[in-house]
Length: 458
Image (cartoon, rainbow, N blue to C red):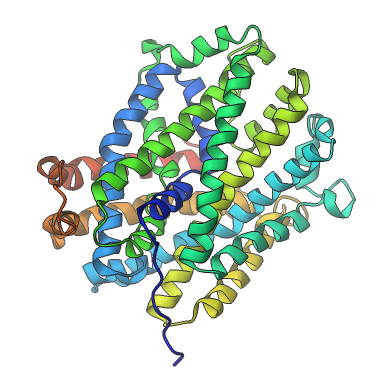
């Protein structure tokens, strides 16, 4: 057996908060939140989302951080500590980030390609009808017009940071990327708000439309929150295990949740009003890849200074993607180090191999391998569906059951209070984790599965 490395950790609270917030802030903030906010009337969606953040979101974050810090272990062993009768729980928890990080690196590669094209003055080419489809399907011909080299470049960036470890790699980069992300985001928002005629689009985004308050509004806000905060990805448990004992878990959870919400809100402020202004309509905005890689380049192509905004926008997207992919890879590396006592380098080599294999499937599945369709989906869509819509809600639901009914809520309460801090929501925490959160998670699971199968769309 190899010598077990000393377990790493964050040097302080700031490093932990920036890294954890960076893990939560990802591409979902940029492409999904603006679309849902636009679809459900702006202000009313924002209100519902904020209420869910400070209740469901914070409770789940507190739970995962407390589990990680109390056990000092990654998601696999931490959940096994709660209930070792069903090892499948640990395996599912580990497989979530292991499956997500490869296809996330593919999408990160697309973002890197778009940033490079804008930075070299070729942004107008990206706005052409059909460009994105031709790029992902590998119909353009040139080496760097294929998504494969961009996937490899982006994956290498992710791997290098994780190899350097928690403090020297993840924390150090997060201290640079997160402030830079906020500066870029605020700068783009300020510029957008100075464009003549933007007020109508701004009103559409911010003024509540109570006629659109419905179950779909709630379901959309819940699913976005779950996806956005990286709940049940193994990240919060892993980062919690690196957390110092004197740090306030409850306060940290609120800080991370509100940081993520601020980025989501500003992303909507950056995208929705500009879309309404330059498209001439509040309809037609698409979710997912279409918004990020087709709609926004077309908006930049007709707006004043769009070429420069495009550079900043895709640099922002690249930062958001990188902080998340690093966290996802670290969640898997932590499992290999903790459970199988591997060195960080060896664990990174194994995870890198998984990234390359599954990532190439996701990459080629949009083009040469598109004829292979698990459940009628491309590899990338299938990986996304099986993790985000099925495995993650199941892991989160099991976590709620274990804390609420097996080890009891005192397991989390004791850890939160072990730092000498008052647990301010202790009186409602038990009710939330035993009753409210499971109901919300069942809604996410059902809506996610039905949506993935094309039966019901939010």
